[in-house]
Image (tube, rainbow, N blue to C red; front, side, top):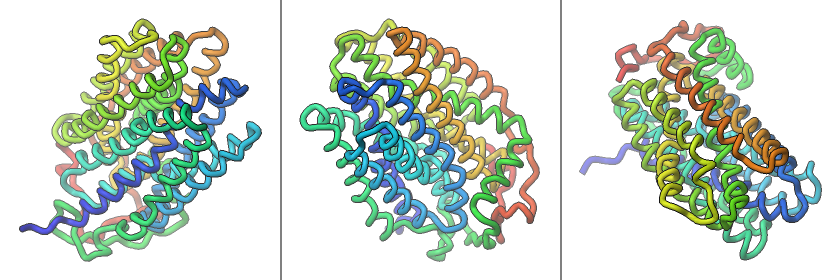
Amino acid sequence: MARVHYAWVVAGVAFATLVAAAAFRAAPGPLMVPLHEGGWSIVTMSAAVSVNLVLYGLTAPFAAALMERFGLRRVVSAGLLLIAAGAGLSVLAQAAWQLVLTWGVLIGLGTGSMALVFAATVANAWFVKRRGLVMGVLTAGGAAGQLVFLPVVAYLVEATSWKIASLLIAAAAVAVLPLVVALLRDRPADLGLAPYGGDRLVTLRPVRGNAAGLALAALRQAASTKAFWALAGAFAICGATTNGLIGIHFIPSAHDHGMATTTAAGLLMLVGVFDIVGTVASGWLTDRIDPRWLLLAYYSFRGVGLLLLPWLLADSVHPSMVVFIVVYGLDWVATVPPTAVLCRRLFGDQGTIVFGWVFASHQLGAAAAALMAGIIRDSFGTYTYAWFGGAALCALAAVLSIGLRQHRDVPPPTANTGMRHTDIEAETVADLTP
């Protein structure tokens, strides 16, 4: 019987870690209704969540560089401890700034230390074959973990209190920490292995410069290309129309229409279930189909869903809402595998860190949408204009995606950039094409 490559053990640990880290991402939606009834304004809570989303995104490229410098295990362990501290201390919050510190700063930094750059780093370092599929599975783990926790958090909020839900999140982060310490390894060469699908040992020259310098050097080079801005703009819209709008405001919007919070949370849980199927399938398709066409399709379907949402919301679940949930679930983060692969194709060895910056735009878009939707709700008494705005943005993202070039349009990094290079093998253009 063939021995299982250790890359799959690393991928399994990464999957469990991303699911646990996603627990907090489930919390704001169910908590907003009881906290609002307790005297907190929607704008105040939206602002706290926006701080979290901004830091979640802006931490990503620096976390990718830290992983290059110090390894996966150290960075991921530190991130889990920050999540546990932020979630645990939030039960003591008595003022807005304390909520921002715990929900926003601590958990934003912790989740940002992993998130999708963690998945991209694992896929790029440990896999030559099946990169798209692995990226899809890990992405699905993070997104599905966020949504599957929703009914649990909603139930605890109604049955006990929001503080119990926060302590559960802290416990989830702590529980996975021993798994990371015991099994996660930084790169195949540490175990004397070639990456999965590779036939040669890949050794790396020491990374020079500090992590901030590595991240900023990658940004400077990438920002000189139109491709980077197209990827970043489209992915910002992806964040706005998932985490920012649906993830944060679907439950309070459904509550406005008379739907029970637990029912709305259950619908978002179904989004998480179908997201697993959609994102894994997207990873499989990304290994075979031009990623630009996939992104065009994903953003188009999402835009149509948001355009119709105001007419689908009601006090109970109708078949049309179920169709929306299924389609939106399949499409939720299906954009990630093709976006990550395009970053790798266009920016080579810098692709993971560049993807970190593209992911930062994703979270900036989510933060802006979370705040603007709260302002729209408080100003007009309805979320309708927020849904319409999201639909228009999806049309723009579709145009940006299909206009991307297919192959690298920047030179490979030079010695003084501080980026790492393989000593033995390098990917060719043929390796980067489907």
